[in-house]
Length: 118
Image (cartoon, rainbow, N blue to C red; front, top):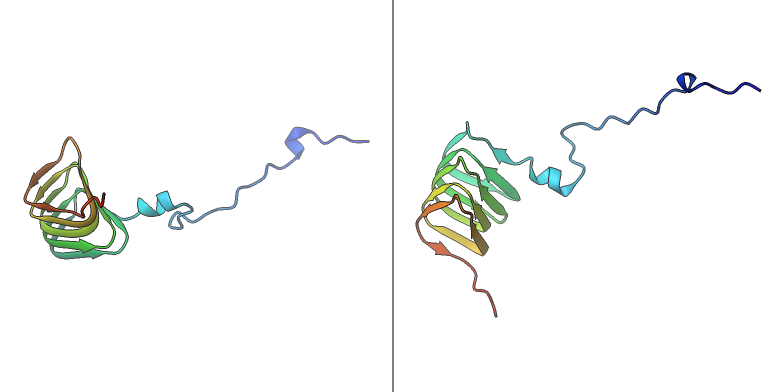
């Protein structure tokens, strides 16, 4: 009886998954990014979550979560579900849930958020 040597057995090949097809919610959330080399002037609308690390001037609205990256400069009225700010925001922020100001955040404007509902 012949016993197959390890080099004779082909290794299993992983099925290729397209890079554009997210497999988890975390991967899906990281797809919506405006990098530091992006500049938007006007209205910005999105439906899920968005990370902005570039420059936006105008207004931003969404029912999702906006993350303002450390390199971001936002000159806009912001109306979203939630905002997490690491960078600079010049304008008023209105949210239906919560606002997080991180240690690197700069905010020049007013914040209006949902009441805690105690």
